[in-house]
Image (cartoon, helix red, strand yellow):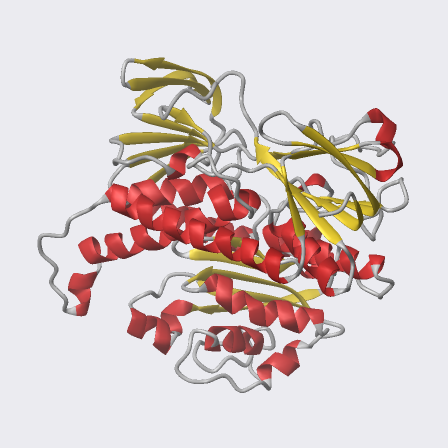
Length: 478
């Protein structure tokens, strides 16, 4: 291990570890600074995503969906299940095992690529020096030709609802409960709130989501958001809009949540409270004034299109910069920056950034919504296809939702794709690829899709955009 590197990466989440690996692949002497300690108090790579975010939440979403189907859905398939038992600690243990395997895998990749893992908290000093403080308080200084800041984000805390043990928790704490609460309140009905609410609702909790905004999933296409709200409500999620939380108090083994809605001041008694109001960039202690790196008005690190800061040779990627806080966005920025440092041409197409909500049904989208196109005055055409008309969806017994494609009437280019339904996250990949390669709706319509598959819904939606879908009635015929 040396004191000087071609690249030092701060943070080993999806942005940082990917950047470090790509830098090493390109022949640069690379180090990655990471301070994360796992639940066993051992150093771990992977950041929020692998340790307490994307991966563990999906492990619980998968397990709870299967449990819910076994209890409520298998009878329709001619399968009778009796004496079904729920073992929440075992479910949590499985989640932890998956996390351990994946974080250990990254450590193996670091070793295979010759990347030095500097365990501790990194701080950028003047002249591209980096100070690393280990968990015992010891400090060591390193220098680098280039620095990549990828320190990620942390859950936003609300002073009016301070975290308290396992009674009032953030998104990380909600993945650790060892038993099913009777009633759960979630502050925030966004992506994180819906996913966590779904986990505990499937296991039997009464779940109430309090959302301060007066619209549900405003970033999602309006038709899809309406369908999602109707579906989640039918599943038993109590979604209350225009409900602003004003405080919480733990009394014994209960939490009293105070909030305001159109009827005035309200109170609710619950067993657990989850604060899921979003995330903020983690830059505290990362930058010194001497480093000279500028922040923007939102507290994010200011970067140009190449993710370079105002200081040449210092880059920032992932959740600490502009754009959506998405693991895959950070990873692609990490690859781009590594390749730019190596003198190669590279870029990220932010116009085709996929988004997914991993509930059931899943909600996934890319590109523009119909509301955005209307506001921009774009001459467009929408094509839709419901999963209720899909043979594969019927065979699966999962017919809720639809595929929606938006095309430019003048160029036939795809402007956006929106899916709510089974395997939406996987189906969306086809549309992301089509938009990346600037394909037309006609290209998709002429692409042969295997039958019977869920992906045929995307094919039919493309045909529908031109009034020639086969398996639904068309508004017009060609």
